[in-house]
Length: 77
Image 1 (cartoon, helix red, strand yellow):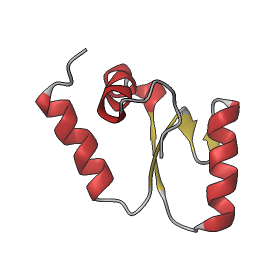
Image 2 (cartoon, helix red, strand yellow):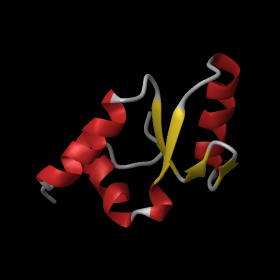
Image 3 (cartoon, rainbow, N blue to C red):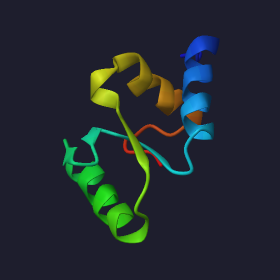
Protein backbone atom coordinates (compact mmCIF):
# COMPACT_ATOMS: atom_id res chain seq x y z
CA UNK A 1 0.00 0.00 0.00
CA UNK A 2 1.31 3.44 -0.92
CA UNK A 3 0.42 6.29 1.40
CA UNK A 4 -1.46 9.01 -0.46
CA UNK A 5 0.11 12.47 -0.13
CA UNK A 6 -3.05 14.02 1.37
CA UNK A 7 -3.22 11.35 4.08
CA UNK A 8 0.50 11.69 4.77
CA UNK A 9 -0.04 15.43 5.24
CA UNK A 10 -2.94 14.80 7.66
CA UNK A 11 -0.81 12.46 9.76
CA UNK A 12 2.19 14.79 9.74
CA UNK A 13 -0.02 17.73 10.71
CA UNK A 14 -1.44 15.86 13.70
CA UNK A 15 2.03 14.83 14.84
CA UNK A 16 3.60 18.24 14.35
CA UNK A 17 0.80 20.18 16.05
CA UNK A 18 0.84 18.08 19.25
CA UNK A 19 3.67 17.44 21.68
CA UNK A 20 2.33 13.91 22.25
CA UNK A 21 -0.02 12.24 19.77
CA UNK A 22 -1.50 8.78 20.31
CA UNK A 23 -3.20 6.94 17.47
CA UNK A 24 -5.41 4.42 19.24
CA UNK A 25 -8.67 2.50 19.23
CA UNK A 26 -11.16 4.69 21.06
CA UNK A 27 -10.07 7.77 22.94
CA UNK A 28 -8.23 8.57 26.14
CA UNK A 29 -11.46 8.48 28.19
CA UNK A 30 -12.90 5.37 26.50
CA UNK A 31 -10.22 3.06 25.06
CA UNK A 32 -11.64 0.32 22.84
CA UNK A 33 -8.89 -2.29 23.25
CA UNK A 34 -6.64 -3.49 26.03
CA UNK A 35 -3.44 -2.21 24.45
CA UNK A 36 -4.89 1.28 23.97
CA UNK A 37 -6.14 1.22 27.56
CA UNK A 38 -2.67 0.28 28.83
CA UNK A 39 -0.99 3.11 26.93
CA UNK A 40 -3.50 5.70 28.14
CA UNK A 41 -3.08 4.54 31.75
CA UNK A 42 0.68 4.97 31.47
CA UNK A 43 0.43 8.35 29.74
CA UNK A 44 -2.15 9.60 32.25
CA UNK A 45 0.35 9.02 35.07
CA UNK A 46 3.25 10.64 33.20
CA UNK A 47 1.87 13.65 31.36
CA UNK A 48 -1.30 15.70 31.85
CA UNK A 49 -1.81 16.76 28.23
CA UNK A 50 -1.75 14.62 25.14
CA UNK A 51 -4.00 14.16 22.14
CA UNK A 52 -5.54 11.01 20.77
CA UNK A 53 -6.95 10.02 17.40
CA UNK A 54 -9.54 7.24 17.24
CA UNK A 55 -8.50 5.10 14.27
CA UNK A 56 -11.78 3.17 14.51
CA UNK A 57 -13.58 6.31 13.34
CA UNK A 58 -11.48 6.60 10.18
CA UNK A 59 -10.48 3.39 8.33
CA UNK A 60 -8.23 5.34 5.95
CA UNK A 61 -6.27 6.78 8.89
CA UNK A 62 -6.18 3.36 10.57
CA UNK A 63 -4.33 1.87 7.61
CA UNK A 64 -2.43 5.06 6.84
CA UNK A 65 -0.73 5.36 10.23
CA UNK A 66 0.53 1.80 9.87
CA UNK A 67 2.02 2.62 6.47
CA UNK A 68 3.41 5.95 7.71
CA UNK A 69 5.25 4.33 10.62
CA UNK A 70 5.97 0.99 8.94
CA UNK A 71 4.54 -0.66 12.04
CA UNK A 72 1.54 -3.03 11.74
CA UNK A 73 -0.27 -2.53 15.02
CA UNK A 74 -2.25 0.08 16.95
CA UNK A 75 -1.79 1.95 19.30
CA UNK A 76 1.03 4.12 18.04
CA UNK A 77 2.56 6.97 19.99
